[in-house]
Length: 492
Image (cartoon, rainbow, N blue to C red; front, side):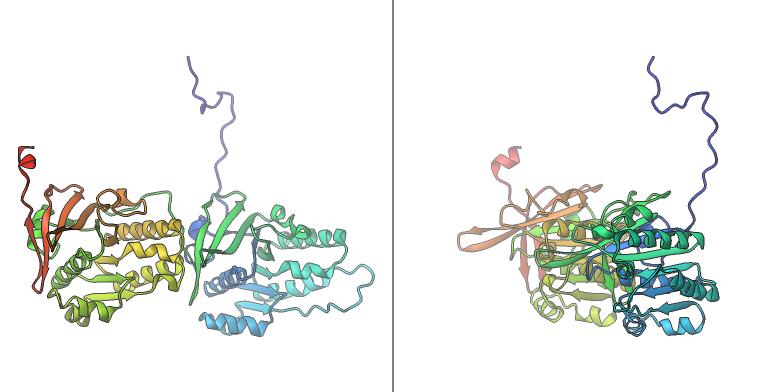
């Protein structure tokens, strides 16, 4: 008889009740989700990274958010002056001076004399006594030391430096501080050899880096370890926005999606008939085809139909400016300007090369949060590749699609494909299986005349037409008519 490998012996003692690790929320958007609640209380966290990776911004924002929430803290900087930190914080809307006046935080920049002669048993005890006094005065339990590696340069003897680092760690633990230290790291996240054992001392280790991929800058955060707690182990992209850090994990462990809503009109009666009544609200619709086949015209037809019903639509354009697109759509009889003026249609435009994937995604998600649209049109997802690598483009689309599904937003994606390949490779980015409805457009030459066609490749949960239709575009909009079948097709 086989035994259950997970079964415990009968003689095993009963399990003691589990106790969750106490944590302090950072208040940084997305970071507490990655850390499953925040930083470990009364323990030490190390934040390591290279130049420009965002170490100081992360720890300074942690202190600021904690002070706002009524948890006083002490910030000690060994690289930047207090005046510089105040100015940098104000640029992000953080008024540290007000919090200092309210006795919620202390911002200190001890002046280290690098030319002083060190004689006898020089140690950090005097400095720590002063810093401890500030913490006691505020009743602070959060203690941040920015650039601890700079502090340790006071000690030229390697043995003394190690002793003082161990002593600093012991002092923080003894006083029960929730401590956050920053230190510089080499490319790849490795600390300088002289401080490499900090990874082992700390209970939680975060590494930050800034990398360039195909001329696009990206910042990433990774939790290397977290004693006594689970965490998101994958790298997480983040952005230093105008008001602080924003982390955007690529994926979550659970699928959180709203169910499909009722049917909605495409804005055109004949297309509704092809789709079996329209599209499902909260679904994702792809409009794919080569250039010149009418993808944007169909997308704008969708947008106008929704706007006429008073449903807010966000139109994201990576290829044409708003005024140019509004002007171009007048030719097929789509006057969208009144809906823009009425506030039910909004355009968000940007050059793909103007920023990285994370900045584009954050800008788009902020627009969705502000405008609260029922529908989002992205024209065109083929331009997303120009934001960086193909993998980055895939991440962008998956995260956008997931965010919209969580909120029940209907998404319309326009994608340009090579002629004749749309039905075989409709997205070119590996997200075809995530699309609920796919419209494939194409064209051919009949003598000296261009003939456009449209077919519904798939539409989940809906009985739709499987016949190709002739697509015409005139000054009164689009027209659809079934293509005549060949005798062989009729026999089939």
